[in-house]
Image (cartoon, rainbow, N blue to C red; front, top):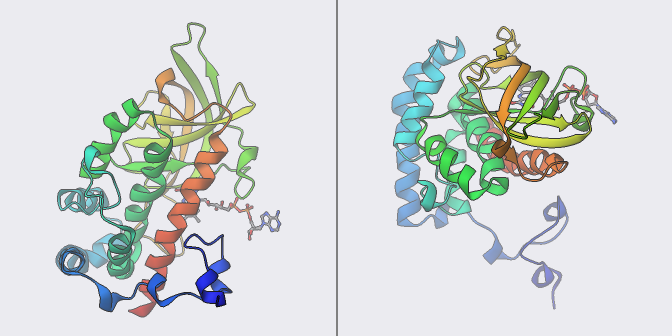
Length: 281
Ligand SMILES: Cc1cc2nc3c(=O)[nH]c(=O)nc-3n(C[C@H](O)[C@H](O)[C@H](O)COP(=O)(O)OP(=O)(O)OC[C@H]3O[C@@H](n4cnc5c(N)ncnc54)[C@H](O)[C@@H]3O)c2cc1C
């Protein structure tokens, strides 16, 4: 048996870089089928008609533009291409989603709101949410009625994310958690309706939460003055005694790291496609 034939369909980490691939395991654009070509054309049309004329406004962060563009994408089904049909997604295969990301590579900095919303914003709920959480949030995230952000990083914890200081304390009656802390570099913070927040229950157990961004006690820092990707909203988020319903815990208490890191890992696939596509233009 040749080395190529031994390659399993699921490779670990960066194994694909050092192992031979079988031709049938490789997807090339020339093999796009009719449906994939139609989806691609819709994405190309969106890029040409909605992004290209707004490029300068996007880079100048015109208020309301990014959320409005996300909503238009939602109306076209472009926010839910990777999401199950039962929640309003179009449940397209990975190759088709890759094609969408490839087309959207040259979107400039609008690719950050898009990737943050559809990736680290939505995936924690898809993979770790309860059925009730999925039914409550995913349809509105897929349609673009709600916009999501992912709040992990803090002033004192970036790469070492588990050193977070943000804490969540259960109320005496068990009905809600009180979240207090500070997050920074949060993409989409300026317009998000929903925050995926990581906080330590009782100051110890790192846990994920779905938090209504309009909750009392949440405030935002000023827009960061970045060197690049200026069209993306990046702000600090402050939580001061924010009441989060107990049913908004994501996954298991103390297992937030599984959510935080797996969402980032999956998001990196889309990110890789987007940035490599951007270099082609
Ligand atoms: C534009 C932008 C958007 C962002 N959006 C989000 C978002 O939506 N949500 C969110 O939660 N976060 C977001 N972030 C934060 C981002 O995830 C962090 O910047 C990242 O995790 C790195 O953390 P840090 O900036 O604190 O750097 P640090 O962790 O302090 O790292 C600084 C440098 O030290 C290196 N380093 C760190 N630890 C080690 C080690 N043990 N050994 C060797 N080298 C090490 C790093 O590689 C890096 O080069 C965003 C950041 C930016 C700039």
